[in-house]
Image (cartoon, rainbow, N blue to C red; front, side, top):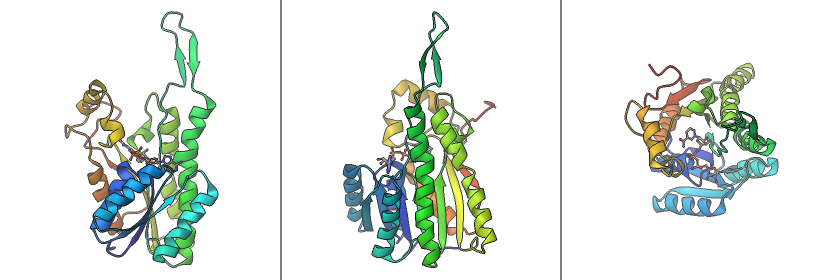
Length: 264
Ligand SMILES: NC(=O)c1ccc[n+]([C@@H]2O[C@H](COP(=O)([O-])OP(=O)(O)OC[C@H]3O[C@@H](n4cnc5c(N)ncnc54)[C@H](O)[C@@H]3O)[C@@H](O)[C@H]2O)c1
């Protein structure tokens, strides 16, 4: 079992939502954190909230789609704390819409998802994760660090209407734990650096809680526990997976029993 105490977590998307919840959980359990976000305002506020918990924190402005930013983030963690033990590339976005919309009267296509709407989500949710992981794990290997790469997929990886961009990004990312674990196994690194993904259902971040009440009620109807999963529950799940070294190379769901596919 690994201990969080004195370990160092690098968390992108750390300025809010699930990323910030993981950062708070980490410092509350004696760990140190480097939070990164493209939104400076969120980052400053996140850093202040962590400091209020007496947490040891550094923050780095970083756009995860930028190779240099990701390299600088990984370097900052090594410079400040000398090691990296958890890589949590949690920066992610949604830009929902149908691939093709049809006019109800004519039945003809009246709107298409733009290339930009598709590509931006892939760039941040998939390429951004690749860059963050590659740069951080390079330093982990070279500095002889032990720990976990914890990606955040989604139940959306199984395919959600209106999310061809998001679902595709998360489905593609869900194969990364298998690839990375197999590659590290070949190189004799798999006992030191594990890789998993967690796949949350609907989490009560400001984005989800801010939805209109009718849409939210419809979502909650599908969740057997009768409510959204809380960001703190996702954070504790990340902690449990970090500690338990038997968990590697797979995707682990946390969705309150959400009815997926067949409504059962
Ligand atoms: N909230 C949910 O229900 C839910 C469910 C499943 C998976 N997820 C995943 O969890 C992750 C976090 O989601 P959340 O709900 O906390 O979202 P959020 O919007 O609250 O936080 C995401 C953070 O990422 C940052 N970000 C966006 N683009 C960035 C970029 N290019 N570079 C760096 N930072 C960037 C944002 O500024 C924001 O602070 C995402 O990957 C999301 O897909 C969320």
